[in-house]
Amino acid sequence: MEEPHRSGCPINLTLEVLGDRWSLIVVRDMMFGNRRHFRELLMQNEEGIASNILADRLKRLLAEGVITRADDPTHRQKAIYSLTEKGIELLPVFAMIGAWGRKWLPVTEALSIRAELLEKGGPQMWAAFMEELRADHLGAPKPARSVRRELFEAYRAVVEKQAAEVG
Image (cartoon, rainbow, N blue to C red):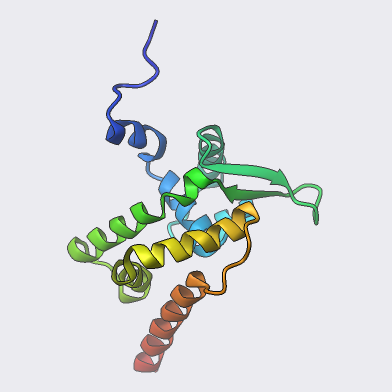
């Protein structure tokens, strides 16, 4: 009988769940962009994911318990995707990936400002953002602080500054 996993190494097992080209991008868009519908995930994706790839990754993430799917009460043919606790707890991983990318790769200022703020904000900011994600995705009480709003405002400020410099 074939083993279901290559090894019991936690890094290997994590990569078996999230190590393909698109899974982390889908989770990123749900986490940071609050994209919860298939069309939002497809049309607002910076990297241009194909619809068949998105459908496949959503199925995989559902099967692994990283996200859930529920019928959208406002539209019979739509579904709402939500992060599970398992998905929400990936936030520190995203923060560290972003910090590494900022240090070693040719990032743009606009697309790296959120990673910079998460890196500087550290575990306290990550915890606050995870509480906000639990409210948005799991129905927990809404916290007073909106880290997502802080990150978006920083992004918007950089984009506006760059537009003013060009114009």
